[in-house]
Image: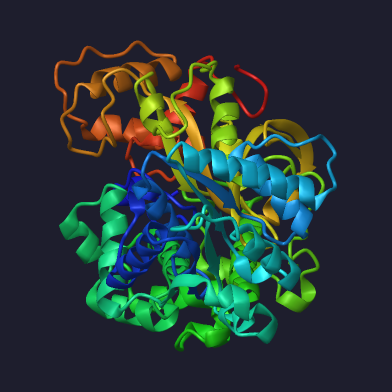
Amino acid sequence: MYLDYFGLQEAPFSIAPDPRYLFMSEHHREALAHLVYGIRSEGGFVLLTGEVGTGKTTVCRCLLEQLPDNCEVAFVLNPKVTSRELLATICDELEIAYPEGNQSVKVFVDRINAYLLANHAAARRTVVIIDEAQNLGPAVLEQLRLLTNLETNREKLLQIILLGQPEFREMLARQELRQLSQRITARYHLTPLSYADMQAYVRHRLQVAGLAPAASVDLFPPRVLRRLFRLSGGVPRLVNLLCDRALLGVFAKEQRRVSVRLLKQAAHEVFGPRIGDGRARPWIFGGAAALACGLVLTGLVWTLSGEPGAERVQTALPEVVRQKVAPPDSAPDVQAPAATVGLAWPEDLPRAQSERLAFEGLLARWELTDLPPADSDLCQFIGERGLQCLRDRGSLRTLELLDRPAVLTLLDGQDRPYFVTLVGLAAGEATLLVGGEERRVSRREIEARWLGEYTLVWRVPPEYTGNLRPGMRDPFVLWLAARLAGLDGREPEPRTSLEYDRALVQDVRRFQVSRGLQPDGIVGSKTLIQLGSSLGEVEPRLSGTGS
């Protein structure tokens, strides 16, 4: 999409959690300090609340990295369950064995208690982290409280961290939950970023994605950042959505920096016209509104999926968007994405495993089975084998033209991301690996849950070190000139110069036009992927050919 245009290595404003992009504001550091204090105290409950998209899960992931080696953690991502189902989930996460088909709460509790006593005897600690805790019912909360009753003379044997939205604090204030509320040893409410923190947050993400510090300042001028703060209210998730859409607008109009006008247009397309000019409204921070933001972008991706062109995601010009995206009351497909059978995450698999399983499925297509440990950087592992990751945004049409399997980031009905592997794409349907299981679904099912984020793998040509731009000197020029000449059916001319000169730039532009790419003359990942396809390289394909 716009990566090569800005000289980025990957999409800087993805909403998927990535520890490399972790930005700790003062409030995030305070929240983390409260969690650490709660973990190190004598036990009980620790509470972290905050508006949707403020970074609660990010803080919790940072906490996990700081936990000692003698700490066992169960991470519950879907707490909208019964007491029995929650206990079963905790057992599954902690790998506690129980009779198959067990329906007895007592059996689950006895097994958990035995596990906690064994851990304590071995000087090991046990922590349960529950995300989206506002979805817990009173009976389930009471069961959690009862789990913490097991204790020694000095400490609880189980510590529970609850992550929830602001309404969860109101729940805990109820009379029937006073016993649980009194057991909370540390609590913190995470607020949105300040203007200074938001400014640093935007530049931090751009620089992690490969942009030089000076270029990151120039791309989002101070006046634009002030408007961005007004529109987003400092909520990181909204900042990401607006920045990503604004960069797409800059790219589509072939400009060099974000303007206030482009940012306002991005806000119109993300939030709707009545929100685009004003300050972020309080209701945007609710779960339904966050989901609506995703659906607006999803509708945009679907609308543009049939247009020609690939490198620019069909040059998603704002005027085209205004003409083609149907209003909400006339778009029957834009609705809350209830879990479809084809895309529903398997109930017997922890959602936290989705990214690992998706990448395993992707790398299996490249016949890579000797995967590194679970906590390793898979893209670094891939790079050591002559391949490279491409993280970007696009549409199914983009992936169809690139013709490579990809990991997609989908959203469930509660706006939580999970990962699947796209391994086949035809006119009306797609083949996915969901939790390692192959499923066939309609393209529209994917488009209803996908904001366009994908990661694919491609083979790096010899001596290629990064984007090749006109006027650069690079040994890769010799390889490139020979391959383009071969595609044209002519003998390559003898070359001694390593300069990417005007004649070769024109050859590249002609090739880009012939493959539906933006003819900017920049030789980046998408151009090289298309070149590999044209040269008939044997690689995994979505179309089923060439692999």
